[in-house]
Image (cartoon, rainbow, N blue to C red; front, side, top):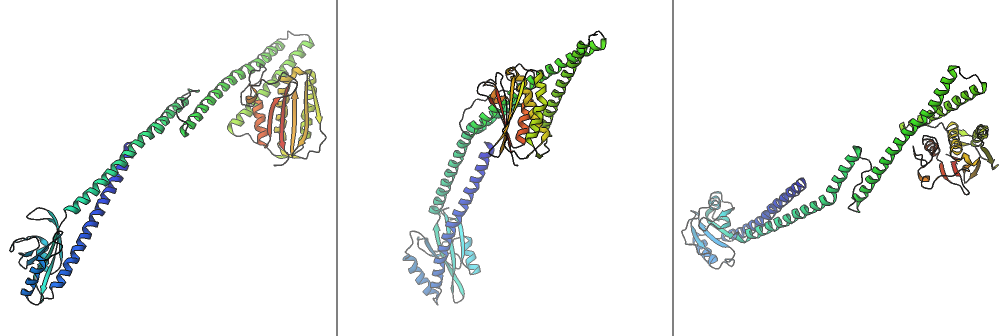
Length: 456
């Protein structure tokens, strides 16, 4: 407020001062020019006389019949500075001691003077022009006018300018008050709330008071606060889940390793069972570590693709073949359907897309394996390759569907997992300029649809 008002006040002061100077110069210059013209005309007229007597006789007549005596005073002054004739009736012989008279007599040139009348103290302007007869200065023709009216007009104009300036300052003051109320105070509230969020108070909400840009910013910060709280909650759940997921296989591996190392197991089937459990849990640990590494690459921006022309059908069939026997042992039938359409090579990263297929097959078995069947199909549609993976499990709760691809999100499922796999799949498919869509299939189960463009 202080800075704004000070700047406006300084500008207005400069403007008023400039206006006053311009107005002063305009009026005074106009009056000076007008008096100079009159004095020059009178001097030219009286300079044509040859004798002093003729000059004085006509000066007396001209003074007595001076038509502008209500506006100006005409004086004829001797070479010694004494009044000879005056349209105001000043006594002859009265001495007037002002610089314009003495300068005009001494230099023989017209002089202008502005100041206070020595007798009346009235503010006046006088123009003195030397009267020259036969090359000799015999007196001065002097015009005098009061500046009272002009000064009053200038003063009124300056006062009006000051009042206008004061009005502008008042408008700026009240507009600043409104600005402070509608912008500065809300921004200060937003700043304090942002500082609280930065300090760790995630989920803090700011009261929305306006529907303008500040209101939009308030909604954005509130949304950011809630998303940060949700993200922190997901990360906390993720750390807890990962800790549990790591501890469970490690416990099994340690337990069976100690049992086998002790030599207590003599039965070959029991030993084989223990080794299989250790192998299975080790693979699970390896997969979890790989997912964590993928997460680390995603977070650091080092997740890259090696794009090359690839046979997407061959890569999918290889993944299906790899998982068919593995799922059969779990009592799950992996059924593959090929539309038979010709699918050209597409630009892609074979290893990354295999990773997508593996994650989706694992998810289908983990969450929908109870249905005993997983269907996989491939086809083309509008210059896109479309791959569908469907299980026949319980499906995904509707409230979880919008978030299932978010990092760390596990929803209400009790199945093991870190909540990273689908987020990694989404990122890989998106980097291929494709789409990953997850929905509940008609008749039950979950349907995952991958759409990849056939061209870059």
